[in-house]
Length: 70
Image (tube, rainbow, N blue to C red; front, top):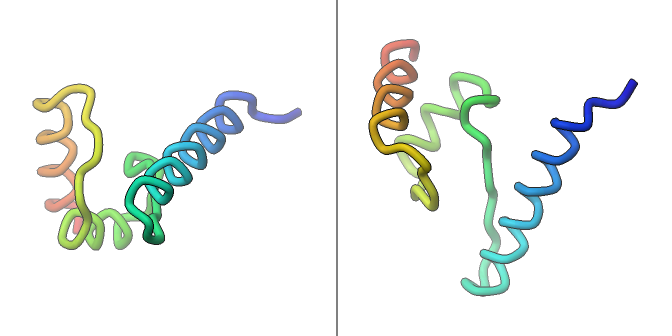
């Protein structure tokens, strides 16, 4: 049975990546960090650019937990 929520997330991430690439005229990788492996999270936090956050305090908690896990 297909996971419709996951399919919607993948579609949304893909749409965001395409929109950013069109506006920035460069290659873009979009990652849903709370579903990513720890080493990828670390690299994104170290080298990436935050594009969107819904809740600043929640993002900060996530970053602290992720850095501590690494």
